[in-house]
Length: 251
Image (cartoon, rainbow, N blue to C red; front, side):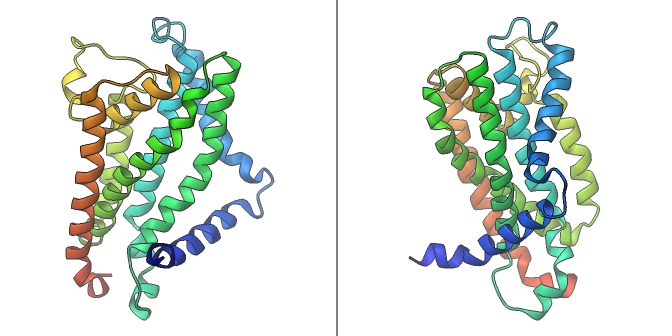
């Protein structure tokens, strides 16, 4: 009973932000489909016969990677400066400051729904078993906790280190190429050791194994994703609460 009431301001803010991006636009919600679609066709046309030739159902493999990375990048980048941008509201009103980050997550969940539909369409076009697609929401909830934890950390630290937004923007660009989104890696690959510590790699692999291939992932992948979500969420909440105390005077 308390949780929905607690999250009510976040949902209201998310709905308002989502509408503001759609209203006045000629294409409206289609913009949420165009971004992953253009990226998908661009990467697919370049790499499908080279890097994707040895990957089963490369189209769905690629698209899953794109939409999950897009969600991660969008939420974390928006979260960096959200407290600074809402400084006047924070100084004048008393309420949970984490609701700004929650609103960003919820708003991007709304837009991600269109990307989920796109993934489903690709699975149907390429005649893949869509039964396993039912597990997507369950896996996505786990992914949301991880992204929310990272976003809490970034939003709080950016108040102290303003340049973190630019640093993170650069870091996510590198992360896109390091994470096997449009290619696959084997144990002997030079990037294997890097991705062994990359939570995004494990989450994307979890989705691919379940949704694209209808397989039960390795226990190590499941445990890594579960631990990443719990650890990043707890650390994010603790740091946000600790750094939040001096927030009004810093912004």
